[in-house]
Image 1 (cartoon, rainbow over the protein chains, first blue to last red):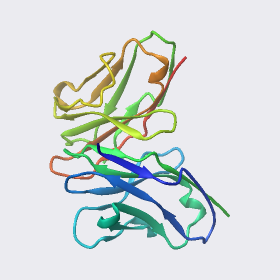
Image 2: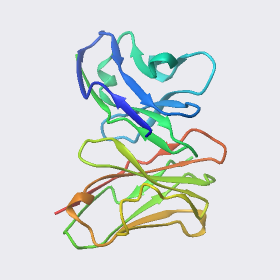
Image 3: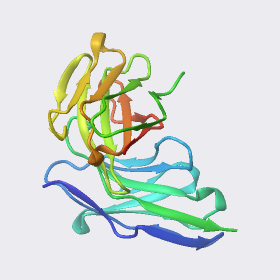
Image 4: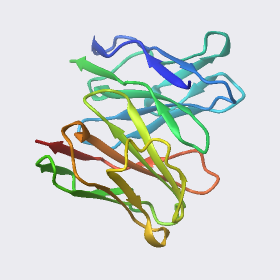
Length: 112
Length: 113
């Protein structure tokens, strides 16, 4: 069955710390991977996506993610977080017809 | 360009009552999706419309849930009768035909008491 696993449910960091959120997927077809973010009180929005080509994908707001096929992983990274990065982050895989299969989400709290 | 809009933003109803959620997709987006997140768990797919047709309704939990998209514009999701386990946040998303990027609404938080 298709699934996405996010390892950390809650992460607390201080400003300027580095961030890495883990994501592993289980999907047998061609993989399209996404990271979405939901800031407090706002809608889900796309951070970045991977379809093919360079496995290191750069997104908005300084985020990047690396697709490692051998590890079925698509971890999200940011070298230096800011207070404004406080949000919930969702990893997702395209489950066919653009239906998204999401992980459980990771709540990130960044303290000034 | 207006984003995906969902109404209401919050709804509290009693068990056994009926609730109708509405989603207005971005104009011109043929694809419309409903998702649900229950109690901090993963966001789960409910169904997918292409214009007014149901492309995939494999995620609909049971026959108490009815989704419609008359005329291929806005969509409604009716829960009748509501049960306690239906509580959660219902998200709607839309995308253009051929596009892989879905745009989400803010969600409707449904609480069944």
